[in-house]
Amino acid sequence: MAETEQAKTEQAETGQAEQGGENGARTRREARAERTAARLAKQIGAFAGKHGGAEGQLAYLGQAGTRIVLVGEDGAWGDLVAPTHAVASAAAQRAGLTLHDSFDGEFAAKVRTGPYEWDRMAGLQLGGRPDKT
Image 1: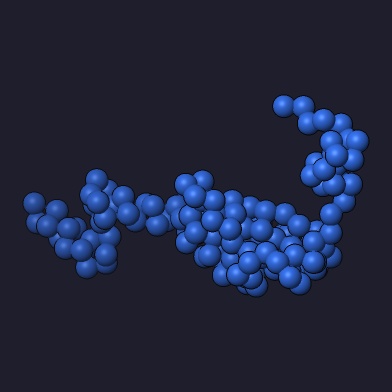
Image 2: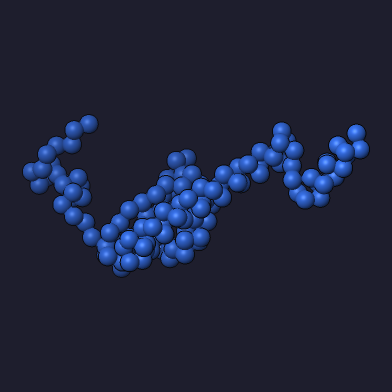
């Protein structure tokens, strides 16, 4: 009995929560968010390394989360989706990504599109194959 009380006191002092409690669930969610941010930051870093650096913009997607749009120094682009805006922000900060408020002006001008993108964006108007859905 004394050991149980001592364990509870130690948990309270160190900020640890009991597994079944509300604090335990919050701690698990926070840990998952940190792991997700770390994974995304690693992917952002890999993209930046492959393309000579990168800049980005966060675009809110509603319940689906937040899109992290990446533009490399060589004009290549890509995107990642984070479950929340907070996780996307944390990932960008961890990766040292320069963020833009909007996707326009000089930032948008850096994007280099290839034949695949043009075919997808205006394929029917330019005589390309219709999209098979």
